[in-house]
Image (cartoon, rainbow, N blue to C red; front, side):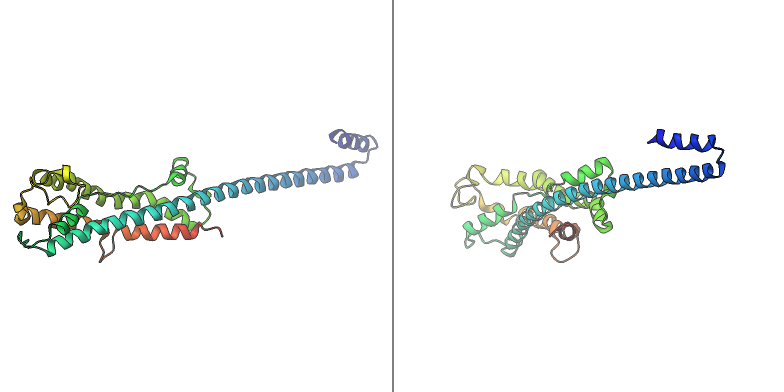
Length: 247
């Protein structure tokens, strides 16, 4: 094709048809420019198609991950609520009368306050976006902002769980280790119905204060009456699920 155009130009010059030559040269330039523009357009279209395909893959993965995160957070929150309600129930029994208190019920409530639960979300897709600095591949600006803020939001929420966990391991559990034989922790009829347990600790101020503190730490996590990180995490999860729903 290039040889064909070269032969035409050579023929026009030999025939001294300079006017036609210049018109032809201009036409050839225009054709070249048009060809370049078409090639660029095709290349841009291919790049856009590839980017849209990658975005779809990320969105699909993010949607699956956040459905899992929703289920996990619901489970963790339910256990936090159990611990909070159990601590509140114990406080409602105070001052505890050792002669009349139902030890089976009290054992159950104490057991409910001991475990710690933490939210550890799946975020492979978000971490992949963060590590490669490709958040711009997400075309929806609201979704992009939610994803960019996700790690910081979760970190802020997890701080409250860490505080509660640290209190349990440094103060709450050590106290019970001195008062309760944990060999009986999982047995029936309960941790208080055991010959080695001195029930007088149930009337101590220290015990009451520990229950107060345990409930306060859990309350900082769930804050049932106010706005906190848990509510923000819940709202963010729900919105991300909604924005990544494809059908």
